[in-house]
Image (cartoon, rainbow, N blue to C red):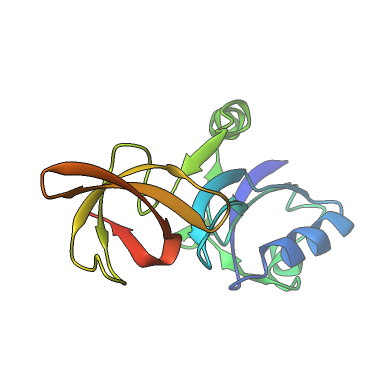
Length: 163
C-alpha cells in the first residue's frame, strides 16, 4: 500500500538523497522557503528547505523495500516511533503542499523602525534606529546626537539589531 514516510537525510545531502530516490521511482517532497538574511554583510534571499534534513517520500514498501530506501545515497534513516517507520497522513501532506510561505525574514535582520547598536567605528556603543537599506552592503540609521536626529550610512557589518 502506497503511503508517505519521513526520512532523515545526512547533513547537506537532502537534494542528493531526493535525486537518487526519484531515480528509483519514489515521489519526494521537500518544501522550500525563501529567507531574507544577512550574509557577508549583504541582504540576500536564500532558498532553503522548510524542514532541514527531512524528506517526505511516497512509495509502496511491497514494491520498493525500506532497506533499499535507507541504503540510498544521502539518506540516514527513517523517522520512527518504535519499530516501524512513521506513516504521514495524506491530509498533512496536502496541508504542506497547499500552504506556500512567500518569504521569511531572519529575526536578526533589522527592518525599518528597529533599534540597532553600532558595533564599530566612531559611534561604537550608541543605539540608533534603522531606517532603510542603502545599496547592497550599507544601510541608513538614525542617530540621536546632542538632541538632534542625524542620518548616517553604515556598513551592514558595523551594527546589530537589539533584541
